[in-house]
Length: 394
Image (cartoon, rainbow, N blue to C red; front, side, top):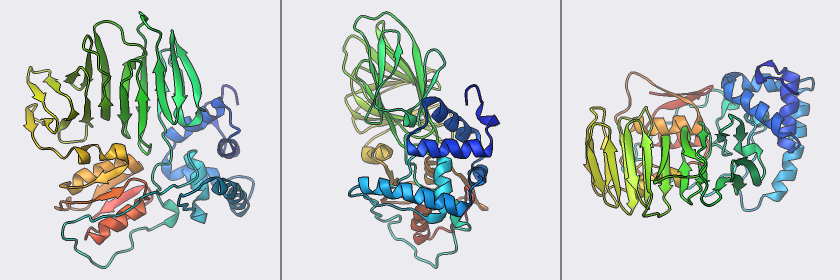
């Protein structure tokens, strides 16, 4: 399929590509092609395209089921959910087949939950939305070449100048040659419906990226400062280097550190940008000249009026719950929870006449399916249901 764009793929070719991908026989080029198609196609048409193959859907399901049984034997201490009618949807996702739900313990969603009769919230069972099963990050190298994380094996994946790029345990590691003077930039994009991605920069700094986030960074740090740029949300554990300050920039907000642990949330659809310090100290600067020095447990908030505000005694465990694969909802309102769900499950959230005036508490694993999440919300008195990839909340 050389030189063939994803838009030109026929249904037969898409089906064959998906089957090769699941079987582990797809080449890097074929995997990239499938990723490109999946990232641009209308999610509502994905299932239709892949099911429309020369073989019957029953034969296809039996074939997939047989291959899955072999995979099940290799999985231990994991709960497997395989709704029979979802098999083609799993192909369409071109991601992990096994829905692994570990530690999906539901606590409470409201301090005083209001139980009521649950309405029919899943209108079409075939449109079930599972939790993300793979880290679907895309790395754009200095040359413009793209690398798709979940289609790569562990080991060296690229060489940028004198810097080696490796995949290790579903994470990315940069190993730079000492005293290198080259300045090349890479960008890693983590789309919606992706698991958290971890990255180790050339100076040893570790970064975790949430869904719908990106990081632009040099393959090797040169000069007297270490500068990176983010969109979305990221958690940093900065390698200490007293001689070189580490700067994280996003939309006019810069966080300067020498070595510390902190979280940065700069999603454009959130009411404020937030920098939360867990260890060490950081200086938060805004382009209008405002500055805040943070201590552990403090948070700098930049609101819509471009004013920096200090919040003390912040629940840092709740702030980085996403990194630990949980929705931590202590004090969270319906709007904030809906935005997190939209990014995690890659769905559209639609409210009725107004957003329910509710404040939540408790926690739920991010590994549960969307329908499980909605059931928990319904137990809290929220009317909601799925329609294709749209969640309607009354």
